[in-house]
Image (cartoon, rainbow, N blue to C red):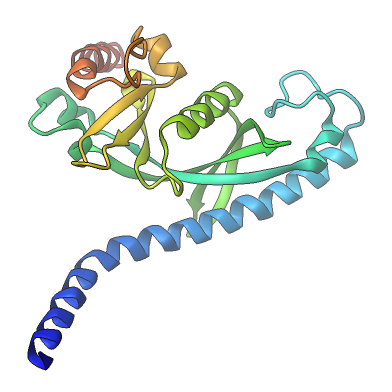
Length: 226
């Protein structure tokens, strides 16, 4: 029994050691990005409240009727943004889920009275995490609804995928049974690729239903950029 316990312990330790670098990096990024998002948002709110009274000015990046409402807004939750290299996408040698790579960008949902009013975009600038933009109110609302519909308690089964060359965002949803990924097209994908969620079932699309529209859009946009 002691030997079996020792071997089992070594096996578990080995598995943990293999996965811990990725987990550690993700946790470290989340801690740094989250701290920056909250720090910068506090400064943003303080500046806006002091310099604007009454209705939000035209083009204000967050969906508030009155700038003073920002005093009750908060950073809710964040997520890393993934993308797919256009060369990999056009070659199509792997599954869409396997092609996705982190961009290094994190986005945080900003809420007011538990309702999304926009996103904060956080990146590393000269080695420091900083908020580089606020906005994307339509995406924030759409994404939060999809997260609520498909995400588990800690949202570990979902990833946000942005295909820049197709101007399209998706929520990737991994099955709890077999890890297979299906996708919810977000507002930009529904606009750019004319995709719609399925009316029946859970509304998610298989990767096979996305690849041809994605490849066509990527190819067209790459050729027009030359």
